[in-house]
Picture 1 (tube, one colour):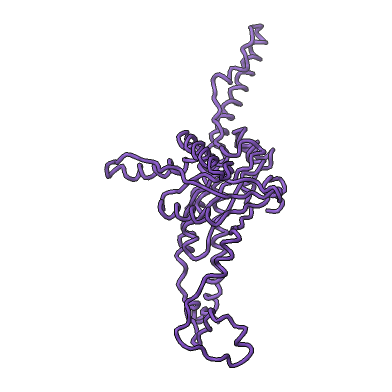
Picture 2 (cartoon, one colour):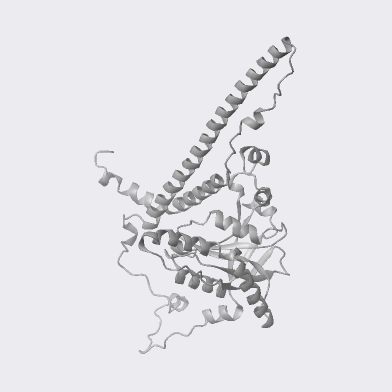
Length: 373
């Protein structure tokens, strides 16, 4: 990650706490539909390479007409696709420009610095995300980021907020639009090189930090007793003492449902990856068959021309195979790259959850498998 950040004009992202609260609120209201919006801020003048996100606003909801029962699934998928593609929609671009103009009138940072999106179970590496970020990052010097908030991961008790940019190598390849095997081998582009993760920090104002440290507590209703010793004076009265009874929650052997769902999505991504590989193998077999036909036709034409030369007849053209035969077009390898990157994302999530579960399973191994020593 450090090597990738060297080529990025943005080295770190600082997000205001109010922006985080707005983003979480928007994602919670629209869940399970993808929530998207625009980010506003500026680059820090004191620290070059630090992008400050000071405000945000959501894009309007996408209205899809009602449908029959047998078409509900199709319309739901269409609704999700429209919501995911909202950052580059023409209507939302006009809305974004209008909002930025209003923000400028009230002396708020009015520089668009990217967009945000919500996701579930880390499933955000797809063509919509790539196209949205490429739309904001067309210019290599454009300092735009994609802020990704994982609703499912955050519901487990820890905030999941990550910032990404497209790597310069991937932007150049995407502009060219040729994700063939030869081009990927020449450029050396791999699935690791699609996205660059930028470190994110959450910033509170000095007034808010002071307020958090000075929140008043309820006055004691009973007479306070004198401290028994000097150590008691150093202890914070607002900090509860640890209970004397043990906590058995950490011994629960139930596997986290988030881990189970992530494993299911991981298997689904691997199946999609195998499907893409099968499509590419089918293309290679079709190409080999057509090339064999072309070779046989060329050998036959050479034999005919040799016979015509012996009989002093005009030769037949040997390049007619380009008109008679049509080579199959190689499918794009972009979906394979995205699937590989998504598999890596799921693998990282599984790795982060398996440490605690594996420790518990090893601890009770003899009880679960009494026959083994």
